[in-house]
Length: 135
Image (tube, rainbow, N blue to C red; front, side, top):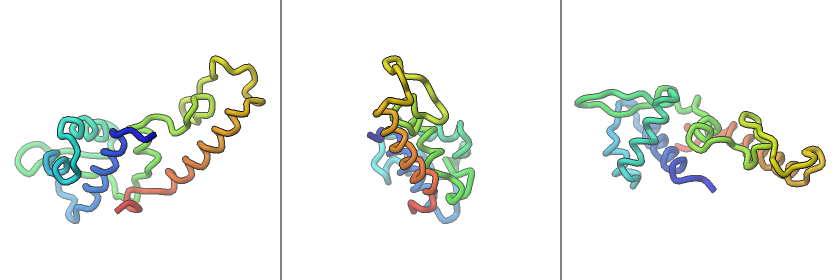
């Protein structure tokens, strides 16, 4: 399941992408508009800023803004920042691979084979969807 963190992050990003002038938008404005708890949103936006998805400006007229055009922000990137690996099991992860403790033979594992298909299909969707596609 998708966490609330990722769900709220995507909602906040789509809100920012809809802003015509791309001027900084306050956390309070985004939180109120998207019905996201303010403190939780603050932590999410900070994480996105640390990963260069968002920029911020302090003071009057300050807030958060996109650092890239919406068509350059892939949903796979957002998923990995906020949710972690796209794969459901570490043994099929492309970026966070770990062998399963209970697996005797990965090549013969039916769960591994199924989860590779799930990963590949999920990755294809997330790689081909950008923030622009959501607005």
